[in-house]
Image (tube, rainbow, N blue to C red):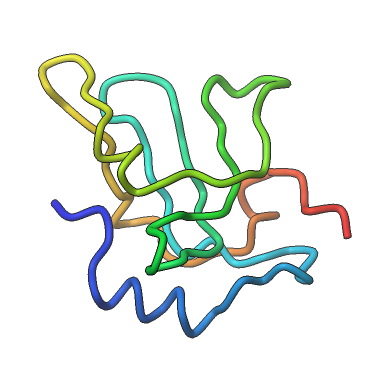
Length: 105
């Protein structure tokens, strides 16, 4: 499965950066199919192939807002050769629906 499709790239472009949005829309959610880690993408730069969003690796105090690259997600290989997958059933939701702290603006 592709982590990002043309349709998804277009949707990220429509939504924009959301940098001034206190409760941004999560356009895509990625998860580690064989371990810990969830990435909630609120924006994507198709030129640099870098996402911005909330990264939760262990569900603790180290979780934070920041950038992560498509290349980085594609490079992860866990148990049984499983990599990062996109949650096809999540749909778009405001970040607050995931009980994640807002951007605090």
